[in-house]
Amino acid sequence: MTQRPASKIWEKGNWNLRCVRIFHETRDVKTFHFVDADQGETQTLFRHKPGQFIVLRLRSDAHALNRSYTVASPPSRPETLQLTIKRDPNGLVSRYMHDHLKVGDVLPVSGPVGEFNSVDINSRRSLLLLSGGSGITPVMSILRYIYDSADTETDVIFLHSSRTPADIIFRNELSTMAAARDNLKIGFICDADAEDGMRSGLFSFALLNEMAPDFLERTVLTCGPKPYMQAIKDMLFMSGFDMKQYHEESFSEASNRRHPENATPDTVGPQTGKGRLPDTIGEAESKLPASDPPIVDSSAAGEQVVNFRISGKSENYKAGETLLAIASRAGIAVPTSCQIGLCGTCMLKILRGEVEMDEDEGLEDEFRAEGYRLSCCGHPKGTLDVEF
Image: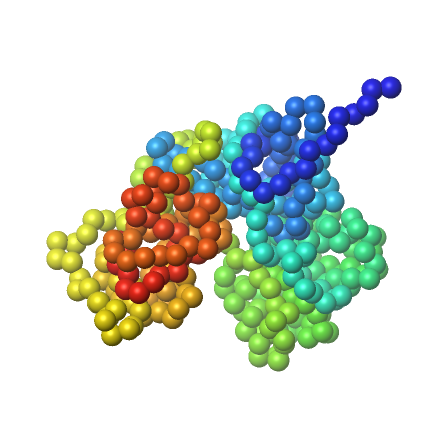
C-alpha cells in the first residue's frame, strides 16, 4: 500500500496559486478555485482564519497592481482556496479575472491577513451576520466554518441584501444550510422582484427589528458597500447597541481607484518572482503646480502638521494617527486596499519629514529609497511634506 505524502500547511507569505476550477455563481459573479502551484506530491492545506483575505500581485505593463480579495472558503475545507469575485464594469482586476483568467493559470499572492475574522473577534454566542452584495464573502467564510464545525451552540441570524433574487450569491447553499441547522436563520432582502419569503426594499430598522428582534444581544459582523454599513451603524447606535460588539470589513469601490494610464484588462497579468509593488498607484496624478502652495512649518511651536503639496492642504494631527487617516480627514482620497501595509496601494512620497511605519512588507527597497512610505500604517513625526 502506497503511503500518501505528508501535507504542507499554508502560512502567511508569498505564494503561487494555480486555478483548477471556475464556477459561475450569478450573471456577474464567479468563484475561482486554487491550489498551491508549487505543492508537487505534497498537498498544501490552506489554513487561515475565517474572514481573512489575500492580495493578488498583478501588473499592467510596467505598473504593479495589487488587489485584496476575501478567501470565501473556510479553513475547514483546506484542499482548495476559493475567491468569489464580482465583475465590476469599472474594475480593472475583476474584469481581468472574469474575462481572461482560465483554468491552469498561475497567480502570485500574499497573505492570508486581516483582523476581521471569527478567531480574533471576541464574540457572543449569538451572531448577527449582515452583508450586502459581494460583501457576502467574508461572512460566508465565517458561516461555512461554523456550519462545518457542527457548532450547535452558536445561534446565527444571517441577513443578506441584494438587488434581485437572481443576484443572491450562494443562495442555494445558504438555503441548504438553514434547512439542516436549527440554530441558523437565513433572510434575504431584495431591492426588486422579491420572491415569497423574502423582504422587499432596502435594509431598514423596521426589517432589522422584525428579522432579528434580539439584535441588541448579538455580536454583529457585517460587510458591504460603505453606505450600507454606515446605515447599519447608525441604526445600531441609535438603538443603544453596544458598539464594542460591532465589527465590519470594508472594501474599496473600483470607481474610487486610480488605474495606470492606458491600462485595460488585456494588459493585466501576474507579477513574476517576488514582484514589485505599485510604482504609479499612490503617486500624484499631476506634477507640482507652477506656484507651490504655502507650506506650514509649525514644528517650532510644537504643533504637528502634514502639508499635502499638490492638494494645497495642511492638516494638524495627534500623535499616533496614520497618514491615511490624516489625509481622509483633510478631504483627500488616497487610494487604498488592504490597509495593513501588505499591498502597497497607499504609498505616498515624502518630501520632507519622518514617517514611522508599523508594517513595511508592502514597500520595496527601491521605493523606500525614493522616499515613499505606506500611509495606512505610517505615523508622521513632526512637520511632514507629502507629494500628493
